[in-house]
Length: 378
Image 1 (cartoon, helix red, strand yellow):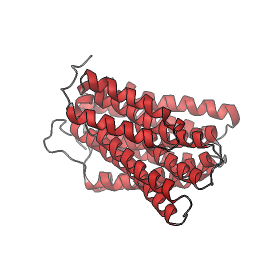
Image 2 (cartoon, helix red, strand yellow; image 1 turned 90 degrees about the horizontal axis):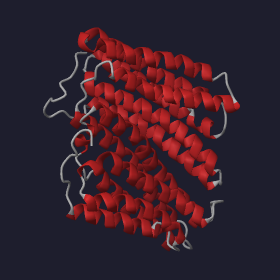
Image 3 (cartoon, one colour; image 1 turned 180 degrees about the horizontal axis):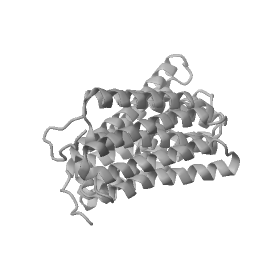
């Protein structure tokens, strides 16, 4: 469990890391489906709140493993077993997502989350034992994570407003652990490997949107009256998904994490990027329901379930990766495009303006390549 070389050439995601990501496909898919149902039934605030709560657990567990793996990953049997234990925790958490959206106790989700995090504590303790130069940092991670898991279990005894407040306090505590730990001595993260891992997870989330596009075609084959609108939604959803992929992978992401502050910002803002990508697929499904008469939302509200995630994805990607390597034109067009897509619900053809805006942004990116990283501290 010796620290990895942060400048190791040719470092790529391992087969274990890719295998690890598979269980998150399950969790993200269930969360997106439940969000879709809540939005379609008109429970917008409750649905979004539950989605953001569940998605935090998914994103945070994934990001913590990724951060650890880029610094200390080995391939012995114990590392593999502990990783598989974390995967089991994800599956338990996924099994409890329906209960969260139904307003039932969050016991199963907390149990799954704690299983993931306890396995992570074991990983940090192994690293502390094998790496004297990073021992203080690793022990801070292990102690902080372990203490918070006790509090997560205690949270189950609360309900109502107290439970919500307790949840927010524990989220703040989880986010604070890396900030405190890394100040004891930074872990040797590998910029190219780390950003590759984030890119791979983005692809998983965008894949959910492709599935939603396919579902629109399937629905069209069974509904002659809504054939044209559904096919249009399918095509436009595909165009937007491809455009979001293009925007995300336009900049060289490894330039965005040169310092500890940049790295933490990059990881934390990805919560919004990832959550938006997952919510976009749910929004497309809501739009399908709206066109087939199966939604309690108005047409305008249904359109917002698509455009808001697009706007958040564009703004988040621009802030963490595009902005540091873009010229003035690109830095004006991308955020402006994010704002402009919010006008889409005012048009009679859903997603049409969003698709046009995203395509326009891509065209600008094609003719204006990245100009280089912004110096650290700027």
